[in-house]
Image (cartoon, rainbow, N blue to C red; front, side, top):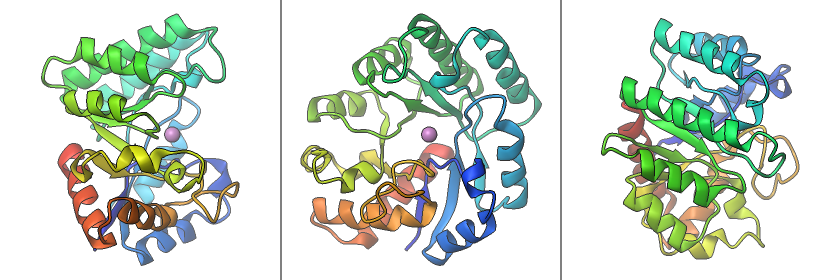
Length: 255
Ligand code: NI
C-alpha cells in the first residue's frame, strides 16, 4: 500500500525546523512521493533545494500562484517561463484564480492562468489548478482551452456533484484534502457520487490540516486521515483508496 501527496508546500518556512523529520514521518506511513507546487519567484530556491535533497520523494512544479498575480505579474511569469526552459518540471502549478482574498487583479489572474495553461500545452505536461471562489470560472476557462491534450488536477476540490461531472467531462482529476474531514463541509455527500478513478489525495501542507489536527500545521503524513475518511465515504477499504489514487497520480505525472 502506497500513497502520494499530490500537493504540499513543504519548502515554506513553517517546516524550516524539522523538514527531514516531516518527510521521514510521511515515508513511515508509505507516503513515498510528494509533489511540490510553486508559489512565486520567492519560493523557487527553497522548493528546488528540497527537491535536490530528496530526489526520490519530492517533485517540483513550476508556475505562479494566483495570489501572487499583481502589478509585477509579467515579471513573475517571465521568471517561471525561464525556469521551464532551463530544466524539466513534472507540472505547471499552482495556477488559477483566487477571488476570495482580492478581486483587484481578476483580469490579470485570468490572463496569467490562460498563458500558463498554454505553457502546459506546449510542454505536454499537466497543470494544477487553484480555484478558490472561482470554480465555475476556472472550469469554463479550462473548457475553452481544452484541445484534447490538456490534463491536470482541480486542487482542493470542494464543489458540487454537477461541478465534479464537468471536471470529469474535461478529463481532469480532483484533489481531495483535509476539507473532506470537516463535518460541515458536505464534500462527503458530493464524493459519494464521484468515482475514485477521478480523485487524487493531497494535503496542501502547511494549510488545511484534517481532523483531528484542524487548525494546526498540516504535513504529508496526514494523507492517512484523508484516505481513511475517503475510504469510509466510498464504503471501501484504505488499500483500495491507496491503490486507485496512487495509480491516478502516477498516470497523470508520468513518474
Ligand atoms: Ni497550494
